[in-house]
Image (tube, rainbow, N blue to C red):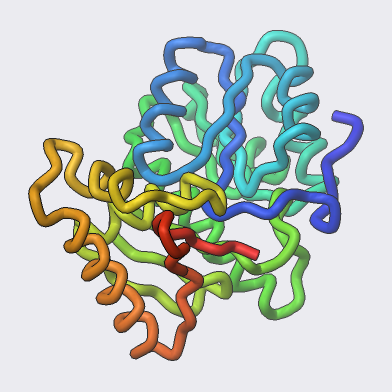
Length: 247
């Protein structure tokens, strides 16, 4: 791994980006799909060489690394990555002996999980690590790889909470609000029409009053945020729909 993109060069992001290094194609696809359901943007590769190349193209906030890889193993990848970045590193492996855990943590992993790993547990570990990192950054520690500033809004779908950039403020959401916000964040600043938003909120079938109901949902979200002294960057685009501004 020759280079990890610095925080100054890294891209802005509206939701956590997770890099997945797992050589089992089926397991990699399963983990990626599951983490996306938990609100993460995920890319996955099967070798250390592919991982280093992809990391240059799409920096990330956290990585999930298997130990037993073809060629360069996960411990080596973790050591190299930790020497260059404070990105959250979670090792997920079938090696569960205490010595293996110690080696993984000594190489720089933030957490060491033994397969099989539940998606809810993995999601919680990733989110917990990201919160600690972002909160620490407000006290002067470096930004995680993949985020230029602290201007990162995170949706925690497991707890239905929208977390502000400094991680010090949370907005509890209803199920409908969570679906709406998740769809907006996934668009990366693109305008979302009211019809599209209604479909995201009620995928089982649009109701007759859904378009008006979306406007009411937005008003309710803004009021909630205002009560906490937060200017939610959710704006109406006249004649088009809604957009969540991230920078």
